[in-house]
Length: 357
Image 1 (cartoon, helix red, strand yellow):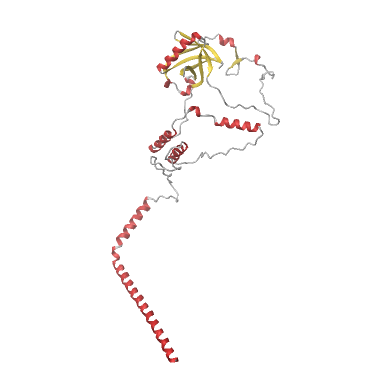
Image 2 (cartoon, rainbow, N blue to C red; image 1 turned 90 degrees about the vertical axis):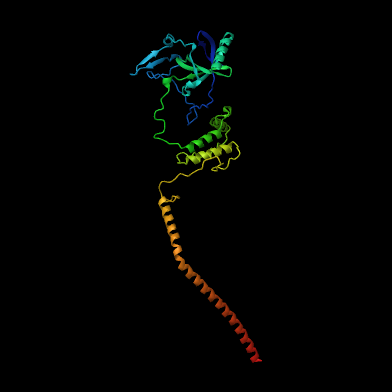
């Protein structure tokens, strides 16, 4: 890897010659601006505002613009004469626990490579000292015309340096938190913990940029003249009022199903360890399924009154039984009448036959 800066680490009275190498790289796909009418490339030219002529790189310098718009020229010689002790030195100023460094301060990352054979011994000494102390080194260094803050730590067998923002460059998060007091129930926290446990850990090396891959496929398809079909966009569900408990429980079930865990039921089903899902209660409206407390009490009172009036209707029960008995007697009489009528008809028919004979 090509070094971008050469200098030394100042470790007390120990000086360690090193080379600075970029530890990261940008894989973003860069686009060019074109003229839509003919596809011609759009380029930017540096033009002087006074004579409106294009200026080459060798004719361009630096200047500071004052509040009233006055330009104060600053040359490279002016900057080189400034007393900057870290111009070619990474000066370690302290060793602190890693958790004292706010991740918001972290910027670019670099590898520090020992520059030459004499640097191998002090380089290894600093590396092993950092390992054994479980601390990181806070240092100052100068790069690209300004002094910066850095953090040195060990990665495998290499000393890495993270550029840090100065503390006054971190903005306070004022007005960012949600407005008002928000209460989170224990059941919601329990489900959130269950979702975190279900998702578990991940192999960082397995993560990749899906969007960049999709852009590369798009470019390849257009280059080969293929027709690009628009991707189906799923419903993100933004702006909808949801039952947080149900959403958390369904998320746990979906995570278990995606990981192929046993006992993962269909969406919305519990597995014995999940909290019950309750729909959002409606505060107003005639379509509420839940009966009100007043209607429930009225129903109970009417039921009790009906039970009290039941014993008093003994006479009605007796009259009903008497009516049933009389009805049964009438039915028996009808059966007897119908049977006697049938026999009389048969006798009349036989007598007629004898008379005709």
